[in-house]
Structures are given as structure tokens and as C-alpha cells.
Image (tube, rainbow, N blue to C red; front, side, top):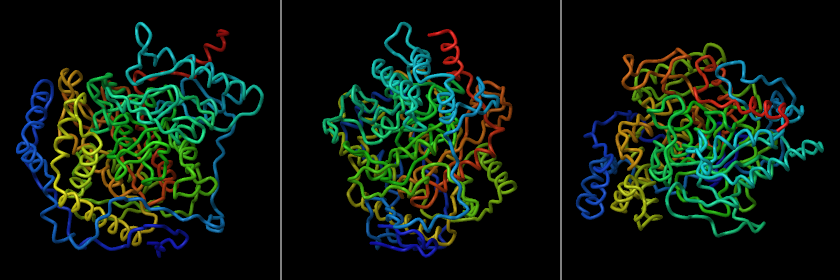
Amino acid sequence: MVSFDDAAPRERFILYPRPIPANEGIPYVPKKKKPLPALRGWLLVASVFLLETFAFIRRIVWAGAGFSSLRRIQKLIEDNEPRHDPTVIPLARLDKAHDSESETTEQTDEIHKVSSPPAAPHQRYSVGDYRALYLAGEITPLDVVHSILPFIRRDTLPPGEHSVAWFDVNVDLAVKAAEESTLRYKEHRSLGPLDGVPTAIKDEFDLEGYKTTLGSLNDYTGRIMNDEGKIDSWCVRKLAEAGAVILGKLSMHEFGMDTSGNNPFYGTPRNPYNRDYYPGGSSSGCAYAVSVGLIPMTLGSDGGGSIRIPSSFCSVVGLKPSHGRLSCYPGQNHANTCATNGPIASDIRSLAEVYSVLSQPHPSTDFHPESEGTGKMVIDPKRPKVIGIPEVWFQKASPAVQKLCRNTVDWLVQNKGYSVVSIDIPFLREGQMAHAMTILTDGATLLPDPRGLSAANRTLLALGKVTPSTDYLLAQKLRRTLMQHLSWIWKTYPGMVIVTPTTSCAGWPIRSPSELKYGVSDGDLTLLTMEYVWLANFCGVPSINIPTGYVRPEGDPNEGEVDSDLDSVGKVPVGLIATGDWASEHALLQFGLDAEEATKHTQCRPPNWVDVIGLARQAKSAGF
């Protein structure tokens, strides 16, 4: 179906949902359910045996988790066709007459002064900072790589300080890429803004010279080669073609199936701001590596908040693009009903820069190249500045999380000309269950043999295997219902961004050392962390995380309260997400730039931040 959005006649889409309100007038009413027990250590291991052995126990737990809740609304959605794929494709524009004459594209290719460390406590080094120093000849990509490697290598004694965030690094390949980039700068033939900039990728993407495990003990290295005879994933290839220096693979939650970032096989990175908390997942190593300053950008993936949750927990920015926008070729999207690739970065301009490279479509995809400058930082002062707040849903978050997010919204209203409208999205509780049911069932079909997997994931897969087909189809009917409702909201408020907290809780605490050895399964906490993020995955719309501030941690006398002291120790980061219409990444990046300005005085670098550029300058001056 091809539809023309009346609210935005310049845009044309394939598979854009019809704007139909979902039983207008049905409010979001949070339903109480019995708490699920948190399983950790040997108790978790024992529970797996029971779940995998006795089907009746699996069915009881499945219903107790809330997956049967869709049956209560069956009569309200049963007439809708199921929608299994949330992809919405913008058609190619035949001319550029749609571009606003007031739009301006920021230039990132400029030399500017870069202090070591950055003068403001909230600043991390950006893609533009590395670029400026390379162009000025102050440092080289090789200086940078030699400064980073001691921190990330697992094969040294002792291992690097931050090596737990790295699954693997091939030193020879990294140094070779840095040498080639250094030579290009010397000969004045740089490839562009990403040339020589250090990065790394989640252990979900294939890269020549590396094994792919998806955070597990198994080997899932791709066997299908691209047109160059390599296994490199398309997005990884685009980074390499842009000259980025790929410093290996980053750790992740096994198979990306939970949001803590716990990995009992290869080790769990601790939260950069508080070692008693998790970094978030499943792109845990990605967010950690950017947060501590080792790299300004990275490639992750997001099937249920796996970019935005760790970005929030580690106080960096992350973008979950529209479904299918970034290609997985020549590999497969293993959760193709909900997941997509996307970047995490130190700041919005860096995020825009790396997105402009990653979003170049593979020739086999139905997506067309974005218009020139769309992925970069384009400023359009005439764009709509409307924030939609689903008020009752918003209030599901803890008071401190709400306060930090509302402070950001208030600043945007007062200083950037935004207006706020109240919106309603029905079936949110059921929608979250539908998303979880869908992605767990996907996982169960992909991993029929659970042997060798972590106990926590075996628990989840056991539940995914008992999903009745009728309930699965109800979930896909609800997907269409929600997509149509969102389409109706955006027809009513063109260009609006929906703003909520990223998670309803502040962080995920590590409550027992046994979790790090055996894993943890805490369904209620998982649902709290995914309270808001699932909507973008299930409906295929883009969504961006922006850090907003910090709260005091568990066990603190002021536990759960806003922490405005940037010098305090043990604070827990909080973020908000802005979710936009299909194919609105450009608008979300502009919103992110405004929100970044709103929160800059509430942000600081973590205590274990590494001054990579300072170290590179020292190495260069010493003649290394």
C-alpha cells in the first residue's frame, strides 16, 4: 500500500500505516500484576532445569509474566490484520524542491582548538575534535591508536583497565588501519570526517579477522560473503570505507536478550559512574566505551532498547533508526520483527556524523539514499517544535526520573520555543507484553538447542517456546493497531516528538556477586527498564536517547533523589527518549541538539574517563 500523508504532503511512503485512532477514548490504565521472583546464582541454575523439564511450569510462568494479557483486549483488535514487519519506506525524492530554503548544514570539516581535557566537565571528545587535530597535524591516528590499545587489550598481563568492555581486538589490523589513515592525512587525501577516528563494533556484526559470538560461547561468524569476498557487515564496511579505525569488537549481553549488560562468560563491564550498577544492555560495551572516552562513536543494535538503555545508563547519546533503515547485509537480522542497527556517540554532532555514514543503503535494500546532508547536522529553524507527553504513561517512572525529564522539557519550552501537547496511547501494557512475546518467540525459533547458553537466557527461551500461535497473532494485530494510532497522532500533530523517560527506573543495581558469575533473571526489573523503549521497536519508528542528569544510588541516605552535585561519587545516570515519525531521524537529531544544550550543565564525565587525546599529544611530543 502506498499512502500520501496529508499532514506532510512532501513525504511519500510505502507501507505507511493508515491514520486510525485505536479505540479513541480508551485511557492507559496501568494494571497491577503479581511480582516475578528475581533469580540469581544457583537458584537461577536450578530454575532452568525445572522450566526446561516440565512444560506445565513453563505455561504457568508464561501466564504469570503477563503474556496472556492480550486475550483481555481481543475483541477490540481482532478485526485488524496482523502486521509482522514494521518497516515503513520513504520513496525517493525526484528533486530537492522540498528542502527548506532556511536550512543550513553545519560544517564539521574545520580546524578548531581542542583542549585536553575538554574545558567543560560534561564534554567528551567528539568526532570533530579528532578531525580538527588530524587536519592541524597536532596528532595522528597512529598516535591515538597506540594510546588506546593498552586500555583495551585482554591478551596482556595484566589485561587493560577497560578490556572487559572489549570482546576482542586485533592489534595488527587496528595499527594497519591507523597507519593508512595517518599516511592519507600526511598526503592531504583524507577520506572525510570519520577518517582516522577510533571506533569499535558490537560483537553482533561480522568483521574480517574476528569471530562473531553474539556474547555467547558459540561461534556465529558469518559464512556468506559480500561482493568483495569478505564477511564484513554492510555498516562495518561503510565505517571502514569512511576511514574509521575499527578497534575490534565490544562486549554485549548474550544474544541481546536482556537489558542489564550482564555476561557471565566474558565478564561484565561495570557502570562507569557507579561500579555497583550495570552499564545497561544489550549494547553494553558500546555505551561503556564511549562513556569512558576511549572512542567517540560506535555501532550497536536495538531490538528492545539495546542502544537507548545503555546510552541512558552510561550518560551518552544513542539513536535507534527507523526499522530496516540500516542494512545487515550480507548477514541476517536475527530479530527482524523488532531490531535494527544504530549508532552510539559522545555527542549529538558525532551521532549525526556517524549516522550519515551508516545510513547509506545497500543496493539490495528498498531504502533510497537520503538527500544530501540529511544524516549530518542540518538546522531547519522552521521545523515543528512540538513535544507530545503521554502523561499517565510518563508517570510510571520514579519521581526523580520524572523530575529530570520534565526539567529538560521545561527548558526547551522556555528557551527553544517548544510547545507541549498531551497525547494518549492506548494498550501500552498489552503492547509491551506483545513486544516481549514477539522477540522471545523469535529467539526461541532461532535457538532451538539451549545447551551452552547462559541460565538467564535459557529461562527466557523456555518461555518463548510455549507461546500459543493465537497469542502471537494477537500481538501482531496489536502492532498494526498501535502503528495506525501513531500515524493518527502524527497526522494530528505533524512533526511532533513523543518524549518520555528512557527507563522508568534509575539504573540496574548489581545486588549479588553471584550475578556476575552465573547471571541474573529479574523479569520485573527488565520490564521497568523497557517500560518506554519497546514502542519504537514494535512500531518501527526512530527514537533517540539524551542524558538528563543523575540520581543517588541504592543504599545512599538520599537514595532515589536527584543528584545535582557533579562532583559527587556513585551517581546513577538518567536519560530521556524522543520518538519521532517514521523516517524522521533528521528531526530527532535536531531535537537532540536542543536537548543536549538543555542538559549540558547537568552532565559530567565519569571518574574513570580516559583523556585519549591528551595521551596522544604526550606520545607525539615524546617522539613515540
